[in-house]
Picture (tube, rainbow, N blue to C red):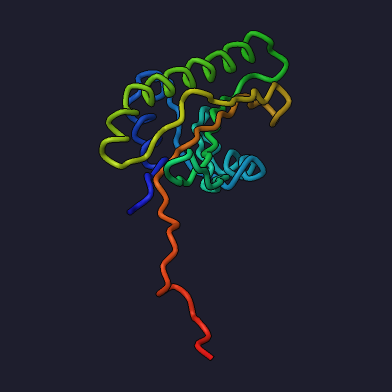
Length: 167
């Protein structure tokens, strides 16, 4: 079974969101928070970003009946603002908050369809988020949130996977 492509899904969600498209949010991927500064410097013309980390955290879980693989994807929403201008900062962080809420509402809307089509379960009952503050990067603020995705996992023992000693 192919894994649910959370990056492609979020790229689509950003592309059809009125706030994201109307305010010029640019979609990209990164390899964690440490890679954001390079991504931002490469995008000198853009001022707003939705960036999904292509590195996920994960664990294997058992619910008493079946096993699943849980991946946690991190989504960054960033906006440039005028340094030293409190109103500009407030507008930027509020816009990031609003976009996060809209992306979550889109995921809630799509969750049942995604589960039926892919067997992936978007775990939206608890979404962790952190705001980055005004000193995260020069003239850029935002937040990140984490989405858990559960997918069925078959870890049943298969003797053909093992080399056995018949001595």
